[in-house]
Image 1 (cartoon, rainbow, N blue to C red):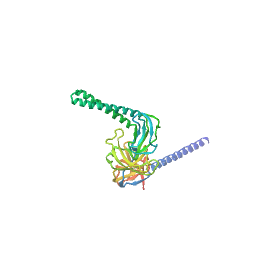
Image 2 (tube, rainbow, N blue to C red):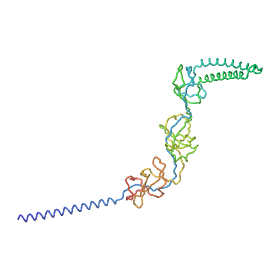
Image 3 (spheres, rainbow, N blue to C red):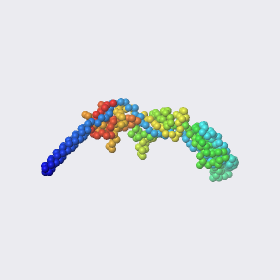
Image 4 (cartoon, rainbow, N blue to C red):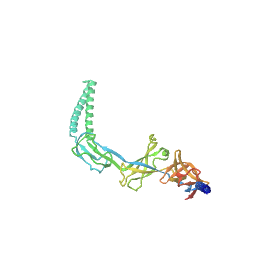
Length: 352
């Protein structure tokens, strides 16, 4: 009886193991079938049909605003400041006296030099008469003539120094904050104030060398400044004659009217430089571009599969980029999910 029960138990164990094996085998096959089915299932992406259009090519750049004319006001001579004739932050005219340095000592020296000049002139006159009478030699006359010329030069030198004691504005403009007061002992090293001409302003910016041939003198640019939505206009008037080797850029300068006085030297400008208008251009959304080590690529739909295409791209705007080669009109360009796509992967494109 015990042997019979043992045989029944063995049969049950064998049957149970066989059933378990079949169940696990069928499950494994189903999992493999599911995986195979998922692999062959196409990925749903969005895309567009590439079309040509006219591309108004604008280059976005950063520039700096500078005063049309700007200098530091200093005195050429040392001395006591006896008068200041401008108000800080005010507008001054060309030729206006800004401040005066005391010139009492120089004027005393001038009177002394003029006396010597008169005496030397009289000696030169007498020597000339004596030479005509052959009472003196030519050499003696030359000495008297040289003394007279030296005395005249000394007088002119002191007059020039006296004229420098009155410092005048070299051009019209706005003068800044002063650093001196009446009675200050001033030297040429002391900065008195800054004078700037802000009626017109210079906008200096640089462009990549590949656009150098597309910029000409007289071209107009638009620019904006931080804190204002107003668009200002400027005209290019100077172009650097060579490319900067360190940055591979070309420096350009434009000039703008500061009619409302709201532009200040030293601020940054966001410049829009119009380049050549391109007809039949291919412009695609920026999100369709995939950067790679060898350049840039995109994916197009080809017979239900993703096809990798290398492209040459150039000017970029906020939302699009200009394609020079690699795409043609009529291609179905994938615009979403491109970072996870692989070449020849099955896709289903929803065209927008």
